[in-house]
Length: 317
Image (cartoon, helix red, strand yellow):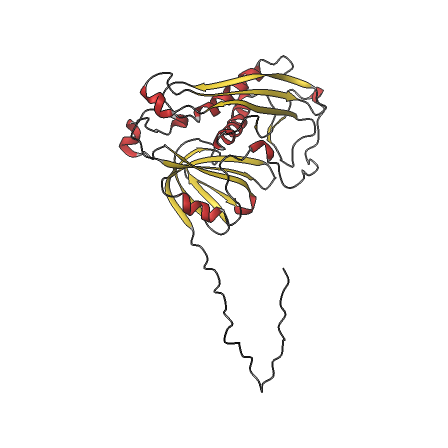
């Protein structure tokens, strides 16, 4: 943007005069921070899924506090966000304890009359350029405030394809000394962002799948280290895990609340684990479905669990 340079010295005999028609545009008022209480943490912002917390957006960062732990995400590090209307209630206290069990232990009631809410999904990178996903549920009627605050840096999208996003900075040369695979008891693995071969998959689904895969593979104990894609510290001989979602049936939590197997949510995917030379270590199909009472996002953690079980049976591991 070009700058208009004004004279540094003005004659004392003649003060500068503005033309009568000149209008000075007021400086835009700084937006106040957006503060929302009682948001529901689903996955990605704390090691423990579920729980009620506080959510804040200021001019610098998004901040989420849950389970006594705070996560600050600089706005410049956010790669994409999606905010879509959902039918999930915010239930806590006595009512929450009595509500039926739901994903991640959050106590969402499954009923025909439950109130609506907003589902916020974020994709962002950390200081090591590693990519993270996160999903929280906001109270209804908060959508406009959140979009206005986040759109200062990024435009929202209901269905961005997660697999299209990569770290905006090229990976640096790994700082970890590579150990030959033959001398290591366990390999490292890099989990790439899930890709989608079909349209219309809510952004929250691949975000939850990605985070759940990180968690499940770490718990499996089959890998020396589970790396997030984009991390500048990834070891050169780490295996690479790819997951592509090939079929998606959204189903309905309300439908499942009416009776077993009504409104089933289903997802089918292909999984491939390969080494850096392209040699396939494992390749197969992994599916997940939610047919009983509970939320549709249950299929994300189900898919991650089934992927873990499939890899644990891979002979080359």
